[in-house]
Image 1 (cartoon, rainbow, N blue to C red):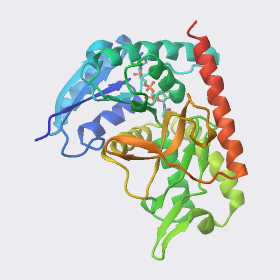
Image 2 (image 1 turned 180 degrees about the vertical axis):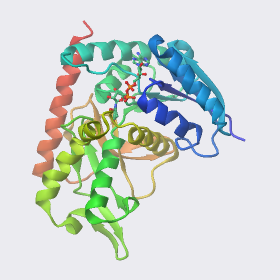
Image 3 (image 1 turned 120 degrees about the horizontal axis):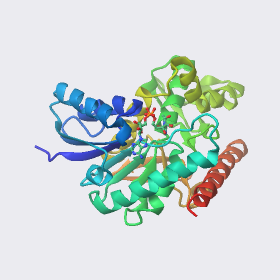
Length: 331
Ligand code: NAX
């Protein structure tokens, strides 16, 4: 039998946490043959609620779940973890300035970076979900210099899955037959959902999405804005932000990273830019990636037309500004 893997979820008493921890305990993130020990961190005002989540995990009697640590102590939470899913953060409240929210999150991610660097397992893989996800991940990277930069990522898989879902609905095909959409850039409304290289599996082989949809006007406008603004549409409908889809996508992100992407398929991940596709190096930017043996790499050599180029640059510009704002909060 495999040794249990310790998985940290921060903000575990929140909405996404509540949807995510049972998925992890059922093997959806790391595989149905992989025992896990869940480490759940939240802040003192949520300690009682966190303990309630722990009680429910015990009550669910998950065969793969070999232990639960529920704590408000960041050191205890980070000790020995091989996977860290950072969902906890400071939400933007009405009337708050962007800079104030950034400043709160910078201080959270700075201190949690230090705890992970000191106490997590060597080669711990980190996924930041909490917004501003790309920039929180960048701060975490800066303050955990001994964690390899390739191990620090942010979630854009939800946006990627939303794009697959929109194409599947439009063409009335199975979502599992659609692949190779790309989310470029920031997990924000400047992200660029790109279908230029996406395909649909048909009895006659893989066909380009553009050819099947045969409506560039829709693909270049409404499709893009629907994906960009899907989060807001969920809030409007549900009165709460996306939770089950965010949790499920976080599992997809880690699973594909650790266990590998299928041959011929790529996924979107926010990763540390090396300058590929002329995206400024030193940003956490969403790229198309494949993964093998626990290591992702950016898919190279895709053609970028003029329409796409502008959109890649626009979202990079926003991330550069966020980076500057985050750094200005450090001093
Ligand atoms: P909730 O407010 O329900 O939960 C957040 C939890 O984090 C709370 O229990 C809170 O007490 C805890 N927390 C706050 N500060 C903490 C700290 N310093 N250490 C540990 N825990 C802390 O929000 P929820 O709906 O679960 O969303 C969580 C985060 O995900 C938000 O930042 C949200 O904006 C972000 N999202 C990111 C998405 C993505 O695709 N990257 C999509 C979904 C989601 O909107």
